[in-house]
Image 1 (cartoon, helix red, strand yellow):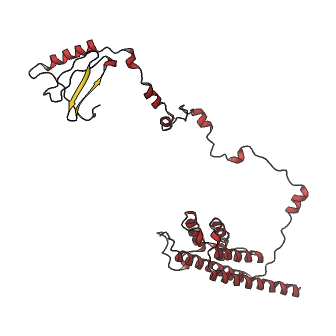
Image 2 (cartoon, one colour):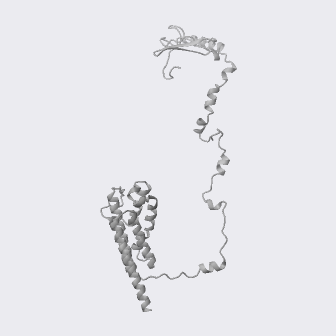
Image 3 (cartoon, one colour):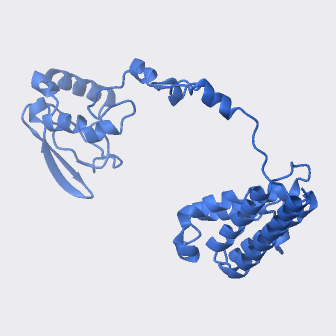
Amino acid sequence: MPSPDRAHEFSGFSASYGRTITVSGSQGAYSTSYAEAGVSPTEYSPGSSSPFGPIGSDPGAYAKNAQQDWKGSLQVSPDGYLVDQSLYNAMSSPDLLSDVPGQRESGKPKSPGRQHAQRRPSNRDEFDGPHQLLDRPSPDTIAAQERDLPHLPTNLFVQEQDDVLAQVNDRLSQCAFDFIAKYQFPIPLESDKRPVRVPADREWTEWVYLLKRLATKRRIPARVLYNGQIKQFVTVLENSLEMRHAAKHQSRPLKDDRNVLQLISAGIQVTKILKDAHAMQYLDRLYISTERKIQSRIGQNVFSS
C-alpha cells in the first residue's frame, strides 16, 4: 500500500463491483483489489490538475454526482465485517497481552477486589500471621536467670582503658588509610567534610562506613583481603565499631577486663583481614601488654586480700 504521508490527486472515481484500483506515482504503479468489499475505485492519476473533475466543470455538480454514484454502488456484504482470523490470533497472543497493564498471562484482567485482598496493611508483618509460641521456662529457671549478674573482674583504671582504646582506634584509622591509599580506592568528596590528608581526618566509624560501601559496591576485590574473605569483611568491620564509641565517650561505664581485651582482639582481626602485618603486630603487642597488666593487678589483689 502507499505510504500514508504521500498525497495523490485523483481525476475522478466511480464504484463498481469486482474492479481493480491502479495507482501511479513517483515510486511506480501498483494494483490491488477491493472485490470483497464490493467497491473498487477506477484508475487514479496523480498527475491530474484538479481533484474535482475536468477543468472548467462545476466542482459542486461533479461532487454531487460522484456522491450519488458511491451511494448507489457501495454494497458491502456481511462478510466484509468479519475480522481476519490471523489478526485476531495476533491480538490475542500472550506476548501482546503481557504488555497491557492490568492483564494476566491468560489474558484476563486482574480482579480489583482480589488485588486489594493481597495488599498487606503497613502495620502488619510476618509475626501477625501463622506463628508458634514456645513453652515458658519453669519458675526455678526464671528465678535463676533473674538473679544479680556476677561481677566480672575490672582491674584497669579508667585512664588506662581510655589510653588502650585510643591506641586501637588510631591504629585502625591508620590501617584503613594505608589500605585505601595502597589500592587507590576512591573516597567520595563531601561538602561538609574536608578532603582526607591524614588518617585523623576521618573517625574510625567513617572509615568503617567507607570500607563497607566499597565492599558492598564490589569495589574491593577478594584477592586483596586475607584468604579472600570478602563475605566476612563487613562482619569483622562491624565488630570493631564499639572501639570509637568506647574511646570518645568519656562518660561511659567502666569496662571489664575481658571486654577491653575483646575490643583489642576485634582490632587485630581488622588488621588481619586487611593484610597489614605491621598494624597487626602493633595491636598484638598491645594485647599482650594489656593482658599482663591485668594479670599483675589480679595477683596484687589476691596478695593484698
